[in-house]
Amino acid sequence: MTETIERDSMQYDVVVVGAGPAGLSTAIRLKQLAQQAGRETSVCVVEKGSEVGAHILSGAVIDPAVLSELLPEWKTQGAPLTRSVTADQVLFLTQNKAYKLPVTPNFNNHGNYIISLGALCRWLAEQAESLGVEIYPGFAAAEVLYHPDGSVKGIATGNMGVGKDGETTEMFQPGMELWAQQTVFAEGCRGSLSQQVIQKYALERDSQPQTYGIGIKEIWEVPAGQCQ
Image (cartoon, rainbow, N blue to C red; front, top):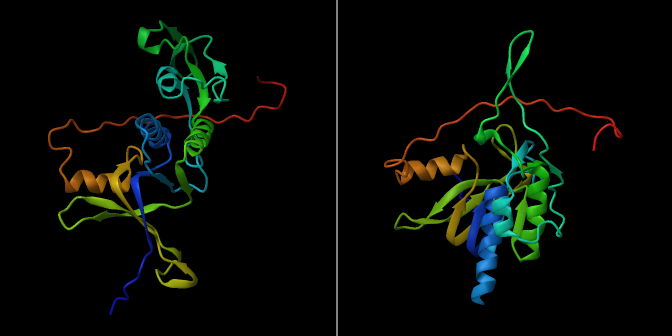
């Protein structure tokens, strides 16, 4: 007979799954709108990484236009956008040579910044928490919860202290249920819960399927004093 595990629950206005740029920006904007409307809106963000940014190792080139809309004072607030793009090159690589190609408008990054997405997320988390957003890293959303009518009720975090054999250990702690009026799934392009919701509600029925590309990057460790 399967043992029923009782889980504690917490209620929020909005629960956001994923502390990436999308999830944190959503949380920040909700709090800004709540302040403008003079109302209290409780917002919670859960993140599977041990800390915000731990699972976002990518570098990126970012157009700061949207960030300026979200947080107009980002320059004085210490946002980690410090290295602006000074030149663009497009190269066609062969085994022995590199051929320089024209830089088309869509590859023009004048006015953009070269950043660490992990550092940006950590900074966005600071801004969100200063507005009253609750952020819980180290808690992976493991299950979508539903109301009897089929609408989303919230999420449940995964159980902790489960052995490799699937059996509970002396360190076992049941997951927590987070209920919300609105649940935002910001897990990334292949989020497991997002895929479940898309399938359950046939959200892709009238939409063009997502497409993906493969990128290859190198991470260099440069001695201090040889870079800026």
